[in-house]
Length: 427
Image (cartoon, rainbow, N blue to C red; front, side):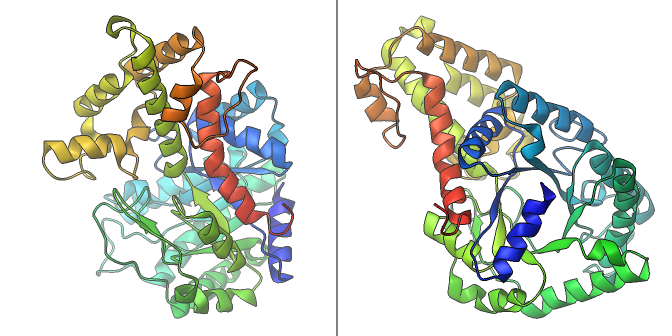
């Protein structure tokens, strides 16, 4: 499957606008929809986990890299999707999780992180050692220190890959939007300076060669930059090709492509333009779980119309109660008075609600919602009222077939924009 990433680079350098979506989510419904969509396109599926989400200590999902691979395999098996068509990526692998520790301590943990990811079957590795650690001097980390640390992790990853008889593909670069969206309302976002990209490539190349990793450098396929896109609680900065013209021209003659982070909520045209301009790996996560939330909320509205109050799941109330009891995933992101915070908990584009779907009370409420709706035919009128934007499957009596289908179609609508943008002229 790594050959597909190489093929994208070859086609890009041949003047063809090809790319691949990167599904950055551990949400079971998102992964299920992504697998079904990939099965229809016949293309490989790139699924990524981040260092905060999945690490040797469990991350916020409670999963180690080995656990995550087993989890994805289980979903693939349940949906009849060939596991061998999945490319697994590790995102921001480095000492980010341990920034409040000394460089020695944080980097030793980062080495274990990289080793565990590769040993578990991850083959696309984003090396990110850009962050200052507890005892690093100065305001900004020296790019050469960052490159040296990234190379240290690459060496560990190469040893683990040799044991797995796999050839890794690397992504370098660190100038990315805030993961999961901006904290506040921003007025603008700066596009990465070409000279900064050049320096990142050059110092990392030198570090790889200095440490005997010249062959590994040949498998560096992409560099992360900021193309001028961003989203937050209530805004989206769409891609402006003119602003990224120099970046696009710079990478066109080099044997790699760009990886764009936080592409969530970009229009189909913007995604097409990104791929055309060599931002060929498009990472997306919150927009997919936001679509899941939209579907669940729509189904909850239908449930309110079809069931008496004492029989309803009350999933919206359950969700907000859990979010208020366990506020660690949203309190730093949502500001304002209680009315404003309550609105953001439900509707923010940052979609911090995604951290709560696995809470036991929420799982029970979701199960009851779907069970309730499985016992009735969903009237066409309610489907048109609450889910008008999905291509609903209709039976001969004019009723939506299954509520689960509404959820999957909501997510798929987002995925289709990415696949159409990445397909070039194939579709």
